[in-house]
Length: 272
Image (cartoon, rainbow, N blue to C red; front, side):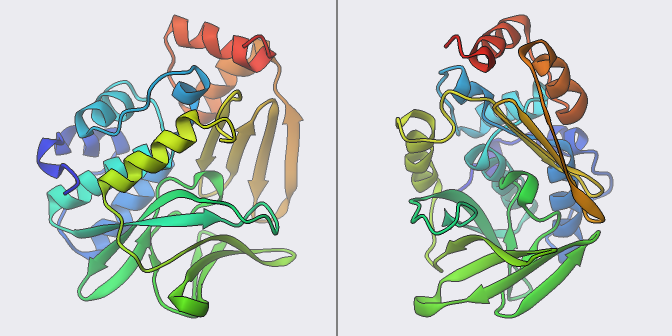
């Protein structure tokens, strides 16, 4: 289903720094998820450059593994799904509505995964950027888990809709909601088309990069860089065009070629 047979699993494991023999068990799922989100950054740079985003497993491997780039949710969770499938996990897709933008009713454009281990379902999401979980979250009403000081919860609303929440100093904040309806790679393709090309997509015309670290979480959106820790208020600063390429490399581990770097500086400067 997810193209796991096409993936060079050893190369993927080396990319995320995973050592040992993976098995379809909870310990492996947790370790893989944590290693993936800590290593492969969330970013929209191909979309910002006007490039087509391919979700083919070999293309994902070439970009996120061999070229050491990142990607957004369809790429991140598509690659993770292929790896999990190759190892022997039962993996299903889900589509979610982002709830971090207040009361606005957003379309279902976020793609994440549900992995079944020992008869229990776990939410796995390597593609929600700086606000996402470090490890899988039990998919059960009333769940509350702490991951290196970051607290996440799951609730169930009307019609069986699940909600992933994050505990902030001001209280619980909804991250996204999703129905218990299985999605497939073809559904990810449709959402990817919208997010990479529709005029109303928030990924067009701006540079976005996130990295959900255990100690500090960072998000670059346009020229604003936000750093968040569990024990202090968020820190914000502006990133100018002359700092962009260095910031992407130093804080997010994103390696660019000269053409990409020049094009993104133009986007960042508002010249495109």
